[in-house]
Image (tube, rainbow, N blue to C red; front, side, top):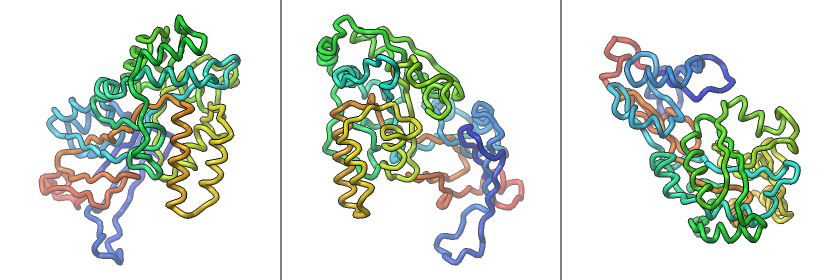
Length: 341
């Protein structure tokens, strides 16, 4: 069985062979070989999984805009995982010279301007769940009692006036290519409260040069963007380490000027190994982060996969795991008399 992941810096092909002598027979492998092929572009891989067989069986990180074409194809189907640990949100540029985004009222105004249900429907083809802050719905520390920002354009305009922008302001919104649909919908919603939005869709390399602090094309204070649309997967399901530290507390993508309370809570959660105590502290972090509107909070995406129709693929919440996946007797590797892959 062969799979393709989204492009990144990694080995061209990685081959995993099943351990037939594994001691726990209840967890015996159901496939003999898995090949991770990163030499293909996502576009080429999609064509192969939709129209052929023998080269690509599974594609991770399928874009919502591709789901209909995959579902209508002769060879593939769409598999959804509704418990993903990914978050889509917008970063406010609080580090540029004269940044207006240090004003909490302005950040709150934009959060009130977003109709999240419509954004998910039109920007993500319905594949998402509204969340109030950063932690995904099935993530450790998610607070089901915390309410998301409601859609309230009147409140948004009132906060804009309070922040000194009664006539709106010009905003530069950037996003990478895979987030173009979501960014387009968000830009139209922001325009409805009087903002003048310049939308720039960037290739991944250029996007990282604007947002990754260790590799900026110019210093942070000279970056001109206002909002950067971001999608982040927390593979550890430990939000303090990669999500909060990475995006708000001195990490590689930290564009936040935070209040001392957030750092104090962060240190508390790292200072205990008691899971119940950690959960309570995380929920306090989420509430503080939501109230301060450190980010443009959006949604928790449904994880999408394009899968060969003769592969019985079972997705996992936290990582790519083929433990329970298998192939049918109609799969190409079986029909051709090959060893089951």
